[in-house]
Length: 87
Image (cartoon, rainbow, N blue to C red):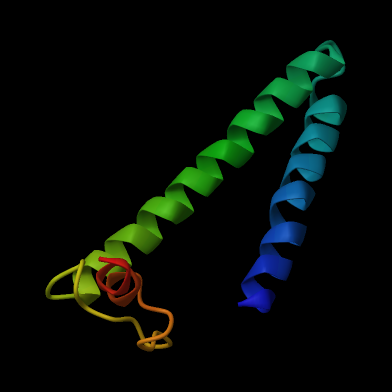
């Protein structure tokens, strides 16, 4: 779980910095705020596409999204088991 967190912590700020730097070099007439705005929207779009893709992969791999368990999920980490335990 820490490895994807580390990659995401490097990928998205790095993508933002690279995009802002590239826009400042490609469009010198644009203000700093314009470059930051476009870079932020690009990173948000990439995050949305990746989140949608992972959601589709989860839905396609489960027969019943609420009750099926993932590969690394056990009874102790199941949200369904936790909700039934509290009731």
